[in-house]
Amino acid sequence: MSSTAPRRNSCRGAASGSRSSSEWPVRRRSSSCYSSHGAQTEEPTVSLSQPMVTVALRFLLAVDLWLSKWLGVCACDESPWGGIRPLVWLVELSGHVGPWLAGTLYTLLRGETAAEQEVMLNLALALLLDLLLVRLVKTMVRRRRPAQNRTDILSTFFVERYSFPSGHATRAAMCARFLLAQLVDTASMRVLVLGWAAMVSLSRLLLARHYVTDVGFGLVMGYCQYSLVERLWLTWDFFQDIILMRLRERFNRAYGGLWMADWTH
Image (cartoon, rainbow, N blue to C red; front, side, top):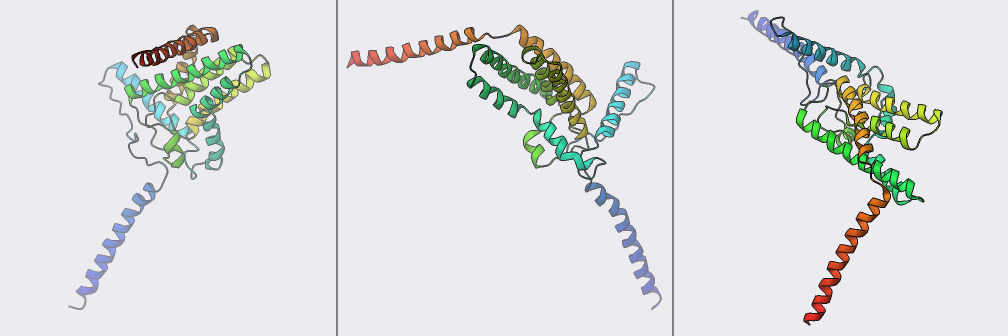
C-alpha cells in the first residue's frame, strides 16, 4: 500500500509537469506582438485543381503576406528594429491627416495673397476628398490589418480599423504631387518631398500597419487623386463669389424677416 501512493503522486507530478510544459508556449505566444484581435493569421492554401486565375491570385496573396511580415521589423519593442520604433512613429505621424489639415487651414487664414489662399483652399479640399475616398474603399473591402500589428494607445486614436488601402500612402502620394506641381520649384525640395512620401509609405510596412498591396494601391490611388483635384480646381474668386452670394442671401432673408416683423407690429 505504501508503494502505490508514491507512484500516484509521481504520476500526478508528471502529468502536472507535462501540462505546465504544454501551457508554456501558449503563454509565451500570447505575450508576443504577433497576436492581434481580429487579425488575419491564416495562410492562403493553393490547390492545383483550382482555376489558374485563382491559383495566381492566391500565390500573389501568399507573397504579399510573407513580404509584409518580413518588412514588419518595427511592429513592437521586441522586433529586430524595435529600438527605432518611436522614430518611425514620428514619420508615420507626419503623414496623418490631422497635422496636414491644421497646417493647411492655418495657412489659408493667414495667407497674404489670393494666390496663396487659392492653393491652400484646394489643398484642404484635396485632403477632405482623400478622406472620403479612402473611407469608402475601406468600407467596401473590409480587409483586416496584419497579424503582427500592435494595438497600443497611440494607434487606437490614429489608426483605423481596416487596412486596404493605406490612407497614409494615398495622402503622401497626393500631397507630394500637389506640392511638386504648385509650391516646390527647386531640385533639393523635390528630393525632400519625394523622400518624405517614400518614408511615410515605408513606415506603414515597418510598423506592420498595412500589407504591401495596401501601400502600393494607396500610392497609385493618391497619384490619381491629384488629377481629379486638378480637374476640379476651385479659384479663389469663384469661392469668394459663392461665399458672398450665400451671405447676401442669408442677410436678405434675416433683414426681410425683421422688416416684416416690424411692419406687423
